[in-house]
Image (cartoon, rainbow, N blue to C red; front, side, top):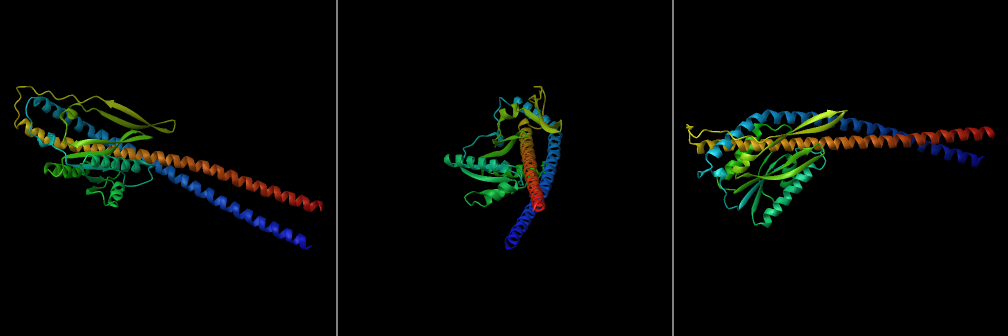
Length: 332
Protein backbone atom coordinates (compact mmCIF):
# COMPACT_ATOMS: atom_id res chain seq x y z
CA UNK A 1 0.00 0.00 0.00
CA UNK A 2 2.75 2.54 0.87
CA UNK A 3 4.49 1.71 -2.42
CA UNK A 4 1.24 2.25 -4.35
CA UNK A 5 0.67 5.58 -2.59
CA UNK A 6 4.20 6.73 -3.44
CA UNK A 7 3.73 5.75 -7.08
CA UNK A 8 0.43 7.64 -7.21
CA UNK A 9 2.10 10.74 -5.73
CA UNK A 10 4.91 10.58 -8.31
CA UNK A 11 2.35 10.21 -11.11
CA UNK A 12 0.42 13.21 -9.76
CA UNK A 13 3.57 15.38 -9.67
CA UNK A 14 4.50 14.29 -13.21
CA UNK A 15 1.01 15.18 -14.41
CA UNK A 16 1.25 18.66 -12.79
CA UNK A 17 4.67 19.28 -14.46
CA UNK A 18 3.33 18.16 -17.83
CA UNK A 19 0.26 20.35 -17.51
CA UNK A 20 2.41 23.36 -16.54
CA UNK A 21 4.72 22.73 -19.49
CA UNK A 22 1.76 22.51 -21.84
CA UNK A 23 0.34 25.79 -20.52
CA UNK A 24 3.70 27.50 -20.94
CA UNK A 25 3.91 26.28 -24.52
CA UNK A 26 0.37 27.53 -25.26
CA UNK A 27 1.23 30.93 -23.79
CA UNK A 28 4.42 31.11 -25.81
CA UNK A 29 2.65 30.12 -29.03
CA UNK A 30 0.12 32.90 -28.41
CA UNK A 31 2.93 35.39 -27.76
CA UNK A 32 4.71 34.40 -30.99
CA UNK A 33 1.45 34.78 -32.94
CA UNK A 34 1.01 38.32 -31.58
CA UNK A 35 4.61 39.18 -32.43
CA UNK A 36 4.09 37.87 -35.96
CA UNK A 37 1.05 40.12 -36.40
CA UNK A 38 3.03 43.16 -35.19
CA UNK A 39 6.03 42.53 -37.47
CA UNK A 40 3.73 41.90 -40.45
CA UNK A 41 1.93 45.19 -39.78
CA UNK A 42 5.24 47.06 -39.45
CA UNK A 43 6.37 45.61 -42.79
CA UNK A 44 3.20 46.85 -44.52
CA UNK A 45 3.50 50.29 -42.89
CA UNK A 46 7.10 50.58 -44.11
CA UNK A 47 5.97 49.56 -47.63
CA UNK A 48 3.32 52.29 -47.64
CA UNK A 49 5.91 54.86 -46.54
CA UNK A 50 8.30 53.72 -49.28
CA UNK A 51 5.57 54.45 -51.83
CA UNK A 52 5.06 57.92 -50.37
CA UNK A 53 8.81 58.52 -50.46
CA UNK A 54 9.04 57.59 -54.13
CA UNK A 55 6.06 59.85 -54.90
CA UNK A 56 7.94 62.73 -53.24
CA UNK A 57 10.97 62.05 -55.45
CA UNK A 58 8.80 62.09 -58.56
CA UNK A 59 7.17 65.38 -57.54
CA UNK A 60 10.53 67.14 -57.15
CA UNK A 61 11.95 65.67 -60.37
CA UNK A 62 10.61 68.32 -62.86
CA UNK A 63 12.08 71.23 -60.88
CA UNK A 64 15.44 69.48 -60.47
CA UNK A 65 15.58 68.63 -64.17
CA UNK A 66 14.79 72.20 -65.25
CA UNK A 67 17.34 73.64 -62.82
CA UNK A 68 19.98 71.24 -64.08
CA UNK A 69 19.29 72.26 -67.69
CA UNK A 70 19.60 75.97 -66.88
CA UNK A 71 22.79 75.46 -64.89
CA UNK A 72 24.28 73.36 -67.68
CA UNK A 73 23.44 76.08 -70.21
CA UNK A 74 24.98 78.82 -68.05
CA UNK A 75 28.14 76.80 -67.50
CA UNK A 76 28.44 76.14 -71.23
CA UNK A 77 27.94 79.84 -71.94
CA UNK A 78 30.67 80.75 -69.42
CA UNK A 79 33.04 77.85 -70.09
CA UNK A 80 35.72 80.11 -71.62
CA UNK A 81 35.49 82.77 -68.92
CA UNK A 82 37.09 83.01 -65.50
CA UNK A 83 34.38 82.33 -62.94
CA UNK A 84 34.62 84.16 -59.63
CA UNK A 85 32.04 81.96 -57.93
CA UNK A 86 33.05 80.88 -54.39
CA UNK A 87 31.01 77.66 -54.52
CA UNK A 88 33.01 76.45 -57.54
CA UNK A 89 36.48 77.42 -56.33
CA UNK A 90 38.88 74.78 -55.01
CA UNK A 91 40.91 75.75 -51.95
CA UNK A 92 43.49 74.15 -49.70
CA UNK A 93 41.73 71.70 -47.42
CA UNK A 94 42.41 72.10 -43.69
CA UNK A 95 38.95 71.50 -42.24
CA UNK A 96 36.24 69.19 -43.56
CA UNK A 97 32.64 68.96 -42.43
CA UNK A 98 31.17 65.47 -42.84
CA UNK A 99 27.38 65.40 -43.05
CA UNK A 100 26.24 61.96 -41.85
CA UNK A 101 22.67 60.69 -42.27
CA UNK A 102 20.95 57.87 -40.39
CA UNK A 103 17.47 56.99 -39.21
CA UNK A 104 15.60 58.39 -36.23
CA UNK A 105 14.55 54.91 -35.04
CA UNK A 106 15.79 51.35 -34.92
CA UNK A 107 14.22 48.03 -35.98
CA UNK A 108 15.74 48.42 -39.45
CA UNK A 109 18.45 45.79 -39.45
CA UNK A 110 22.03 47.03 -39.81
CA UNK A 111 21.07 50.24 -41.64
CA UNK A 112 22.17 52.64 -38.89
CA UNK A 113 25.22 50.56 -37.97
CA UNK A 114 26.55 50.57 -41.53
CA UNK A 115 26.16 54.36 -41.79
CA UNK A 116 27.98 54.92 -38.47
CA UNK A 117 30.81 52.52 -39.38
CA UNK A 118 31.27 54.22 -42.75
CA UNK A 119 31.39 57.61 -41.01
CA UNK A 120 34.03 56.41 -38.55
CA UNK A 121 36.08 54.97 -41.43
CA UNK A 122 35.95 58.27 -43.30
CA UNK A 123 36.88 60.23 -40.16
CA UNK A 124 39.95 57.98 -39.67
CA UNK A 125 40.96 58.53 -43.31
CA UNK A 126 40.76 62.31 -42.89
CA UNK A 127 42.72 62.17 -39.62
CA UNK A 128 45.43 60.11 -41.36
CA UNK A 129 45.67 62.84 -44.01
CA UNK A 130 46.15 65.47 -41.30
CA UNK A 131 42.78 67.10 -42.02
CA UNK A 132 40.55 68.30 -39.19
CA UNK A 133 37.09 66.76 -39.46
CA UNK A 134 33.86 67.93 -37.86
CA UNK A 135 30.35 66.50 -38.06
CA UNK A 136 26.87 67.65 -38.99
CA UNK A 137 24.54 64.80 -38.06
CA UNK A 138 21.13 64.18 -39.64
CA UNK A 139 19.06 61.58 -37.80
CA UNK A 140 18.68 60.77 -34.11
CA UNK A 141 20.65 57.50 -34.14
CA UNK A 142 23.88 58.95 -35.54
CA UNK A 143 23.48 62.07 -33.37
CA UNK A 144 23.17 60.00 -30.18
CA UNK A 145 26.10 57.78 -31.14
CA UNK A 146 28.62 60.56 -31.79
CA UNK A 147 27.35 62.77 -28.96
CA UNK A 148 28.37 60.05 -26.49
CA UNK A 149 31.93 60.07 -27.86
CA UNK A 150 33.74 63.29 -26.88
CA UNK A 151 36.60 62.75 -29.36
CA UNK A 152 34.24 63.86 -32.16
CA UNK A 153 33.10 67.45 -32.75
CA UNK A 154 29.46 67.92 -33.75
CA UNK A 155 28.68 71.30 -35.23
CA UNK A 156 24.94 70.81 -35.48
CA UNK A 157 22.32 68.04 -35.44
CA UNK A 158 19.08 67.73 -37.42
CA UNK A 159 16.24 65.17 -37.33
CA UNK A 160 15.46 63.35 -40.57
CA UNK A 161 11.88 62.14 -40.04
CA UNK A 162 10.08 59.77 -42.39
CA UNK A 163 9.30 62.27 -45.17
CA UNK A 164 12.05 64.88 -45.71
CA UNK A 165 10.79 68.22 -46.98
CA UNK A 166 12.37 71.05 -48.94
CA UNK A 167 12.25 73.21 -45.80
CA UNK A 168 14.30 70.67 -43.83
CA UNK A 169 16.82 70.37 -46.67
CA UNK A 170 17.03 74.17 -46.86
CA UNK A 171 17.85 74.43 -43.14
CA UNK A 172 20.73 71.97 -43.59
CA UNK A 173 21.94 73.65 -46.79
CA UNK A 174 21.93 77.13 -45.24
CA UNK A 175 24.02 75.90 -42.32
CA UNK A 176 26.56 74.31 -44.68
CA UNK A 177 26.71 77.33 -47.00
CA UNK A 178 27.24 79.71 -44.08
CA UNK A 179 30.15 77.63 -42.78
CA UNK A 180 31.73 77.22 -46.21
CA UNK A 181 31.38 80.83 -47.39
CA UNK A 182 32.70 82.17 -44.08
CA UNK A 183 35.89 80.16 -44.57
CA UNK A 184 35.38 78.07 -41.41
CA UNK A 185 35.46 74.88 -43.50
CA UNK A 186 37.21 74.15 -46.77
CA UNK A 187 35.19 71.16 -47.96
CA UNK A 188 31.80 69.64 -47.21
CA UNK A 189 31.22 65.92 -47.71
CA UNK A 190 27.90 64.09 -47.50
CA UNK A 191 27.63 60.49 -46.30
CA UNK A 192 24.23 59.05 -47.14
CA UNK A 193 22.82 55.60 -47.91
CA UNK A 194 22.24 55.12 -51.63
CA UNK A 195 19.15 53.06 -52.37
CA UNK A 196 19.95 50.01 -54.53
CA UNK A 197 17.08 47.58 -53.92
CA UNK A 198 14.74 46.38 -51.18
CA UNK A 199 17.49 44.13 -49.81
CA UNK A 200 20.53 46.24 -50.64
CA UNK A 201 21.71 49.77 -49.94
CA UNK A 202 25.19 51.27 -50.03
CA UNK A 203 26.65 53.98 -47.74
CA UNK A 204 28.18 56.51 -50.13
CA UNK A 205 30.35 59.59 -49.68
CA UNK A 206 30.16 62.51 -52.10
CA UNK A 207 31.61 66.01 -52.05
CA UNK A 208 28.96 68.71 -51.73
CA UNK A 209 31.22 71.77 -51.61
CA UNK A 210 33.01 72.97 -53.60
CA UNK A 211 30.71 72.06 -56.46
CA UNK A 212 32.17 70.58 -59.62
CA UNK A 213 30.99 72.19 -62.91
CA UNK A 214 31.44 68.93 -64.82
CA UNK A 215 29.42 67.03 -62.23
CA UNK A 216 26.53 69.46 -62.64
CA UNK A 217 26.59 69.14 -66.41
CA UNK A 218 26.72 65.37 -66.72
CA UNK A 219 24.83 63.97 -63.73
CA UNK A 220 22.08 61.51 -64.69
CA UNK A 221 19.38 60.11 -62.43
CA UNK A 222 17.69 56.87 -61.45
CA UNK A 223 14.14 56.53 -60.16
CA UNK A 224 13.05 53.51 -58.11
CA UNK A 225 9.42 52.39 -57.99
CA UNK A 226 8.06 49.91 -55.44
CA UNK A 227 5.77 47.37 -57.11
CA UNK A 228 4.03 44.17 -56.05
CA UNK A 229 3.59 40.95 -58.01
CA UNK A 230 2.05 37.68 -56.83
CA UNK A 231 1.83 39.10 -53.32
CA UNK A 232 5.53 39.98 -53.12
CA UNK A 233 7.22 43.37 -53.15
CA UNK A 234 9.75 44.26 -55.84
CA UNK A 235 11.58 47.35 -57.07
CA UNK A 236 11.56 48.59 -60.65
CA UNK A 237 14.45 50.91 -61.53
CA UNK A 238 14.18 53.44 -64.36
CA UNK A 239 17.42 55.04 -65.50
CA UNK A 240 16.64 58.55 -66.70
CA UNK A 241 18.78 60.22 -69.36
CA UNK A 242 21.13 63.06 -68.55
CA UNK A 243 19.36 66.41 -68.57
CA UNK A 244 20.54 68.20 -71.70
CA UNK A 245 21.98 71.66 -71.12
CA UNK A 246 19.74 74.53 -72.16
CA UNK A 247 20.91 76.22 -75.35
CA UNK A 248 21.28 79.96 -74.88
CA UNK A 249 21.84 81.82 -78.18
CA UNK A 250 25.09 83.77 -78.27
CA UNK A 251 23.14 86.93 -79.05
CA UNK A 252 20.97 86.55 -75.93
CA UNK A 253 21.42 89.42 -73.47
CA UNK A 254 20.88 88.60 -69.81
CA UNK A 255 19.28 91.25 -67.62
CA UNK A 256 21.73 90.19 -64.90
CA UNK A 257 25.29 89.09 -65.39
CA UNK A 258 25.35 85.29 -66.08
CA UNK A 259 27.87 84.89 -63.28
CA UNK A 260 25.43 86.47 -60.83
CA UNK A 261 22.68 84.15 -62.07
CA UNK A 262 24.99 81.20 -61.55
CA UNK A 263 25.79 82.32 -58.00
CA UNK A 264 22.05 82.56 -57.27
CA UNK A 265 21.15 79.18 -58.80
CA UNK A 266 23.94 77.09 -57.29
CA UNK A 267 22.48 77.17 -53.74
CA UNK A 268 19.17 75.95 -55.19
CA UNK A 269 21.00 73.13 -56.93
CA UNK A 270 22.83 72.25 -53.71
CA UNK A 271 19.54 72.25 -51.81
CA UNK A 272 18.08 69.86 -54.37
CA UNK A 273 21.04 67.50 -53.97
CA UNK A 274 20.69 67.49 -50.18
CA UNK A 275 16.95 66.83 -50.43
CA UNK A 276 17.50 63.96 -52.85
CA UNK A 277 20.15 62.41 -50.56
CA UNK A 278 17.75 62.65 -47.58
CA UNK A 279 14.99 61.01 -49.62
CA UNK A 280 17.28 58.18 -50.70
CA UNK A 281 18.44 57.65 -47.11
CA UNK A 282 14.86 57.47 -45.84
CA UNK A 283 13.90 55.08 -48.66
CA UNK A 284 16.90 52.89 -47.73
CA UNK A 285 15.89 52.94 -44.06
CA UNK A 286 12.30 51.96 -44.87
CA UNK A 287 13.46 49.20 -47.21
CA UNK A 288 15.79 47.92 -44.48
CA UNK A 289 12.89 47.98 -42.03
CA UNK A 290 10.73 46.06 -44.52
CA UNK A 291 13.44 43.41 -44.87
CA UNK A 292 14.01 43.20 -41.10
CA UNK A 293 10.29 42.87 -40.35
CA UNK A 294 9.87 40.32 -43.15
CA UNK A 295 12.69 38.22 -41.69
CA UNK A 296 11.19 38.59 -38.19
CA UNK A 297 7.79 37.47 -39.51
CA UNK A 298 9.33 34.42 -41.18
CA UNK A 299 11.22 33.56 -37.98
CA UNK A 300 8.00 33.90 -35.96
CA UNK A 301 6.21 31.52 -38.34
CA UNK A 302 9.01 28.97 -38.03
CA UNK A 303 9.13 29.29 -34.24
CA UNK A 304 5.35 28.91 -34.01
CA UNK A 305 5.57 25.77 -36.11
CA UNK A 306 8.27 24.28 -33.85
CA UNK A 307 6.41 25.16 -30.64
CA UNK A 308 3.14 23.78 -31.97
CA UNK A 309 4.85 20.54 -32.90
CA UNK A 310 6.43 20.31 -29.44
CA UNK A 311 3.08 21.06 -27.78
CA UNK A 312 1.30 18.36 -29.83
CA UNK A 313 4.02 15.84 -29.02
CA UNK A 314 3.60 16.58 -25.32
CA UNK A 315 -0.18 16.17 -25.53
CA UNK A 316 0.21 12.93 -27.44
CA UNK A 317 2.66 11.56 -24.87
CA UNK A 318 0.32 12.54 -22.05
CA UNK A 319 -2.69 10.87 -23.70
CA UNK A 320 -0.67 7.72 -24.39
CA UNK A 321 0.47 7.61 -20.75
CA UNK A 322 -3.09 7.96 -19.49
CA UNK A 323 -4.28 5.16 -21.78
CA UNK A 324 -1.51 2.88 -20.54
CA UNK A 325 -2.40 3.65 -16.91
CA UNK A 326 -6.08 2.88 -17.57
CA UNK A 327 -5.19 -0.38 -19.34
CA UNK A 328 -2.78 -1.30 -16.54
CA UNK A 329 -5.44 -0.57 -13.90
CA UNK A 330 -8.04 -2.65 -15.75
CA UNK A 331 -5.63 -5.56 -16.06
CA UNK A 332 -4.90 -5.46 -12.35
